[in-house]
Image 1 (cartoon, rainbow, N blue to C red):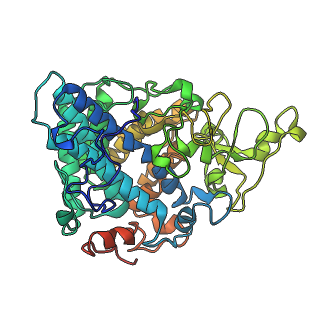
Image 2: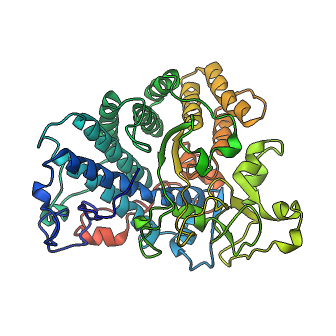
Image 3: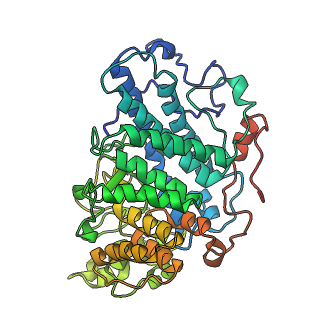
Length: 488
């Protein structure tokens, strides 16, 4: 979605005490800005506010990194172990309450909640044609941000349809995750009832996106009957289909294809810098996951973050085309070129596996300006139809509908160019999710919700690592009113 460079809406979370002099977190002090209390007076005001609420989707690059690095799919990588130290702690399962990456997950997603709530607080100010769609999109976004928060942290403060003042912020407590999920379900059910099947603008939420995220929320709660029924609405709608060429699914030139249910829109503009990754207009994950000091064809140089493991590479069948499309074996690639001796790259001290994330990696022809480590135009595919089919397969299998689950799994496999299989256990579906979705940020959360994390993740402690710790600084800023997650 098109971004605006001037924000009325401050990038602060509803319960983050980062600005201690204002009555409400979204009050605006500079004299050249419009008074926040009188802002929603025109349709344009609501549209600008919605743009601001979408903008916090930029934080999705952290979901990709942590969802892979915390699992057995990737290592942190980078220049050194001190390069994004928090990612290395997560990689080693040594993370605690002091971790910049986890603090950013909490702050940025609450900032998204705040921007959505700001719209909803003023939803009855005026009437105009199309306002119902704006409110539905705001509720979709609030559900998305709360879903990110609850899957990372479990119980979180639940704030609905309002901004809060400092006094309330230091008194509010964490709400049970069941209440947070109930609000997510309510918001997405409402959004699905209002939104159309075609996005009002490229990158905006649709009925299918709301239903798909609702089905996912049900799946994460083991509500398999509700999940199956919800996913079936997406499948039978006829709106989506598997894109024929798996190898082109993640190219910038092929975004918003028939498989796209919802994605985060990026451009080749910079917007921010290393000191403010949330301010970027480009996809930070792509440049950071590129090949360090690379000089050669096809790819561009990058920072060697989030490197796939040998275990992930070995898990694929050698005849599965998705292995090569998902994982770049850099030495094999170089050896296959006409001039291998002329191609060079460097190895970072943060770890090296010989593999790179081939879905989200810097490629020539997909490079923005001016600092192309920060300006990739490649969209993040938040929900694609293959994921919907596999989630539906899982839900139907759990409900005893194994034959239909097998049909859904094999649609995904045949599209990828590999023959169908017998789905004679739930583990077959779990494995298929890994093969289809590796590198996309889902693996850790899939392992946790299915009870497999301790089996596959070194250092994982049952009863502790299912959730990430609440950042200690946020506990302190909330007056010590938030409890810490068990084990931290």
